[in-house]
Amino acid sequence: MYKKRIFHDPIHKEILIDSSKDEEVMIMELIETDAFQRLRRIKQLGTASLVFHGAESSRFTHSIGVFCVARKIYKRLVEIDPKFEAHKFALYGAALLHDVGHGPLSHTSENVFNHNHEDWSKFLINNYSPINSILRKYDVDLPKKIGELFSSKNLISNPLKTLISSEIDCDRLDYLLRDSYNTGTKYGLVDLERIISALTFSPDGGIAIKPKGIIAIEHFLILRNIMYRTIYNHRINEICTWILENIFKKIRSEFKNKIWIDECLRSWIFSAKSLDIKDFLSNDDIRLYYHLNKWKDEAPKPVSTLCEMFINRNLLKAVNINCLCNIDKLKLLAFARQKVDKLNLDPTLFCGIKEKKFNGFKSNNSLKVWNGNTLKDLDKESELINILIQNQENSLLIFPSCIQEDISKEIMKLKEKI
Image (cartoon, rainbow, N blue to C red; front, top):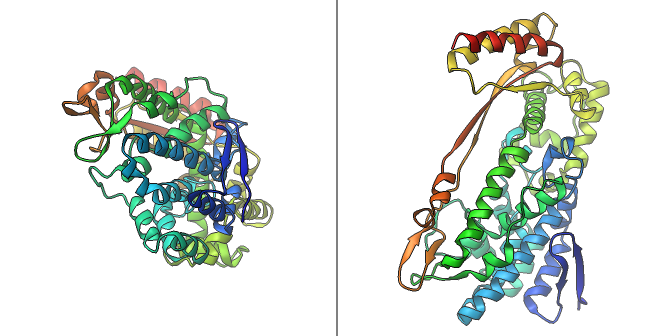
């Protein structure tokens, strides 16, 4: 029997897991699986530590935090409706395991390897024996119940779906607090306790927010907007992703048999759609960085050049060109690529336009306002939330630092013609 276990967390402080409760014994057992321990070797914020030096925390730390948030919400909801206790194992398991399917550098893998972490989380829960057998010990249908919560399919009025996979879920309630703390940014903190205290059930069985919680939700969504614009979509993150994408694009197209790649990463690069569980679990930030370091020294150009840029943070530059019309953006790109070509660099690898879209808040009918008489959409109850629904687009021109002055002058010329 496990003893009580304490995780000392910078956000939630002391997270105590109690062995006298079956659902928390389950959590202890899941934490000890190799698949969950692997999350210690996956950076929560991917390449963001190249901008914010404190952003070194892991998906392991975040996942423990999401479980902590889910447990707090569970205790609140069970006070309102004791029947919600039936969802305890599914809620706890889904909160802890929601990110177990992440690849190296978290969301960066989704671009570099065309990897979907939600699909892999669901696959591991259903097919990875150590996790599956633990879950089935407590409920034979538990893997299926949890897996369905990770699906992108919208399930209106499903309280577990709202808590695990919606615009305001346990995941977001933890990572906005955690990422703000770890990056040292001071944009404000989510009023987690206020949001939890305002949660209730709507007449249709879904989870709703009381009117007193609207301001805390507005604050949460403002912070989300700021964090995406300043951290998650930071230009250095975009440049790093661009470099990694081009490293693997070049390997796939020309260097499959010209550089050393171990069998695990080879599967990720060339057979991502048919990865087996062993190769999936064997890949993490350590393996990826080992290859990048080795290629920096041993791979032919331009792969070695791109790896050196990434490893030593000798990065490409980027400038926001939203001020230009689409035709002028293409003119600027052609100008930049001509300059890059003269440097004997591949213009398509070392220069390009990266479009990034920030999706605004979407209520997706998962969380509504209930005042005891009427049930309304969040965006209908708040003008501010209605504004935050709007999407934002960002265009970056990426190029080598040595032509930065030429690019700046060309942008000024194009802007003068507007």
